[in-house]
Image 1: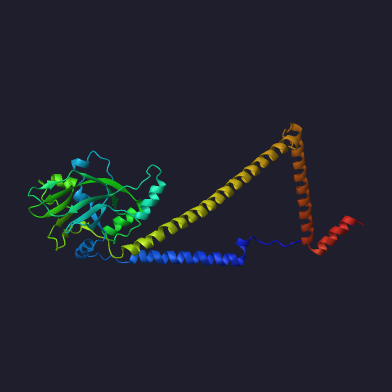
Image 2 (image 1 turned 180 degrees about the horizontal axis):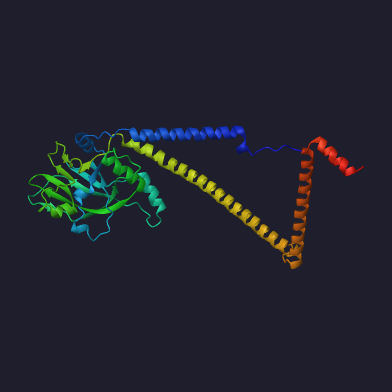
Length: 366
């Protein structure tokens, strides 16, 4: 007969390999989690951010929602707007063919790969939404101030979540939250140009309408337009009204992109094992209950069968009582007589031997 051999995945060497892989995965995940928690978040200064923008790089800026779109603003009181702690925008400068002319692109934060994934999953939209608006930064003609109509853009939003440590900067927190949720909302902006001051500003539609009565209102971006040979100057609101992501944000994003799916798989596996153990426990509890119920039923049936077929005679007659009493009284009399005989023998043995001899002679006679 061929000996029994366990399945391949239950063999000892395969189990050792599996345990090594699981242990290595857990250790790697814990190390990545520790790095994610302790890595610092140094914020770059605005000078380096503006230099990057002037050099044609795309920069990301995170703005405080409550500062630029107050909760009590009538403009948005009747809209179902998704309010979060921050909203995220991107800015980029492109050079035009006309000397001294540049184009500023601004709009909602976007991730090309994620946009393509979500566009593929969303069957209702066949194209990716355009989140950018263009402004020509050329020579400002005339002297009259100009204000554009409201510009509606889909803007990424984010806020504080439990997966992001509290010590992480506001910009990193909003960006990481958006990476997890990919949540956007529609916001409106206006472009204001003042030729006399050679200034172009981007305002939230909320604050622009209220700037006459709100001294602390400020634009999202103020651009000073200079001559052809001089680069334009850009001014963003300072922290905490706006900030840029830290230099370690890409590292933290890579760590989070590793931790979240692996952690979710681990949690799913633990939940599955827990559900199996819980199911086995309930199954055993059910089996024990069924066995206990069966034992009780068998006991009840046994008692019923005994009463029906082999129960003792329960009725008692007067003759039975008399017989019991007579037997008891006879036993008592026998015990008393036996006790009396024993007592007389003890008394005889206690008497003097000569007296006992005389008694014997008298008893025997001449």
